[in-house]
Length: 167
Image (cartoon, rainbow, N blue to C red; front, side):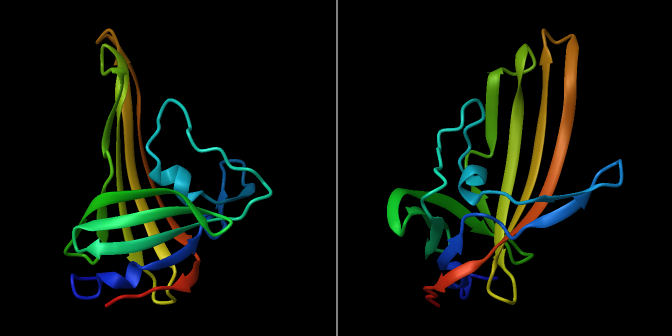
């Protein structure tokens, strides 16, 4: 992806990622999927989005220019929230989102921690959205008891429902 074809991201996508499976330490397989709206909504203490099981949820992406992207949250094809995020095209063909990447929990390393989440997007050759996440969490209590720091990485794929490509 580059500034001339960044419009390939424009389109409407399913809110749940295409299910994937992982094998745990007991050798058992688990199927999981992630919700795009929860992943992009950076509320660490309380989840502010509430979903019902009756409605149909999706989201629409539209590149405003090479440095900003608009995300529309859709419920039964009606917009119920819209956000514009800063973005940057990287040399490896991804669109990196600048979405409150660094969040503080309480007083970091005194009584609390930090959360760093980096999100980048690109389009798969079949037109689906690739959502790549790298996250780090760590903290401490009174600078003496360091809580376990964790690093997470995952890649999810969201199915394209319709195309509104603008090149």
